[in-house]
Image (cartoon, rainbow, N blue to C red; front, side, top):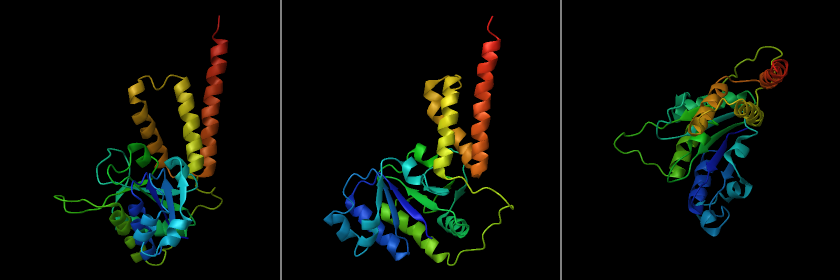
Length: 248
């Protein structure tokens, strides 16, 4: 098992092609694209891949970042600027070691890369467990898409054989997938909307991201996600019952 490279809204077919080239040099062949602007199987993309067209032909496209990471257990997001979120920040080398450990545990892992001009949006970064930042010359740190992918992929390749996996307590439920976490987030946010928790509409997006980040850091198992669903359900049910008994 390897890691998945996820390009969010890549702009140019050539950049997708050079990304495939960088990936295959480091033994990676799982590529996902979120709303690509151009055809990743165009002649320009294939030519830029320099023979790595097998990666492009295997690539899958998605309508949203949420869909692209739904079946993954661990997601890392690359960014060159501070997003002011409470998240672990690691270098590509540290990320590679962690990813090797996760994969050795049997977890599906992916790394997000943003559009060439703007990088990832905050909502995309909020879906990740960890942020990757490349320490470069502070006076000039401009990387193109393929260079960014190559830095992460190379560190993954150099990390070598997987390290010993962390032990899970006996009988522990499997780690929750992103799809299962997103299901809980949507449930919780729907009920918070209904009870008026998000009172200031302008603050809702940042509040949602902060709440999601709290739960992302918790390393939740599937059973814990189910328990949280039950807690929200019972709180809502109790509120409705209480409202009925308080009626004159």
